[in-house]
Length: 217
Image 1 (cartoon, rainbow, N blue to C red):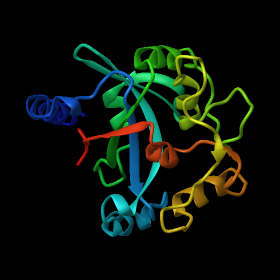
Image 2 (image 1 turned 180 degrees about the vertical axis):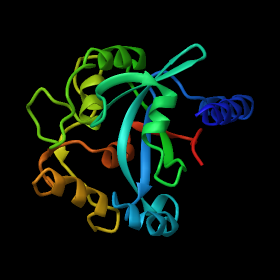
Image 3 (image 1 turned 45 degrees about the vertical axis):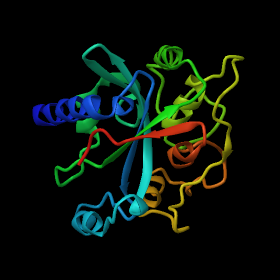
Image 4 (image 1 turned 180 degrees about the horizontal axis):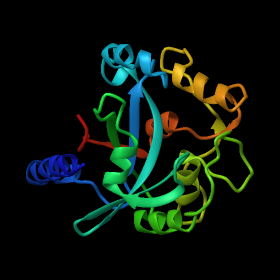
């Protein structure tokens, strides 16, 4: 994992010289993108990776919150492995490393019109809660974008991100194999249309400023 961190530090240094706005900031959102036909079955991994054709071929499956303190970068997110947790950046990168050892695509979003520092501190108050594998509303468990929704509030205390019918579909209208397999394991249908949030629509929200990708392949 050391080489990942060395790479990130080099890229951050380059961007800070040429484009200061691209430097990762406290409270930035980190989106994780995998090929839309990514499969959790080992035999299909090579085909899935080779079929990826860039951003249009990606499904944003996860969103995390960056906490930047001096030279240290932490990630606050909700995952099946950790529940709602705060951990070092290298743990986050390790957790999302693909089966062939490569990293997925990472995209940075900066939420406009909020106190980002307050959002980070608010997110940390949810640490220790269980992960909501079924993506259902109105329970104590949280999934990744639900954590973001609860953490980012306006000055008047309202949620910046509204709930909407949940969308797990790729941009071409198909259901990614990844989601079909995950929910099959849980013994339920993909909860398409249930009120909630998801990383894909959150990334496209006009309140999220897209920042140049600063780490990943």
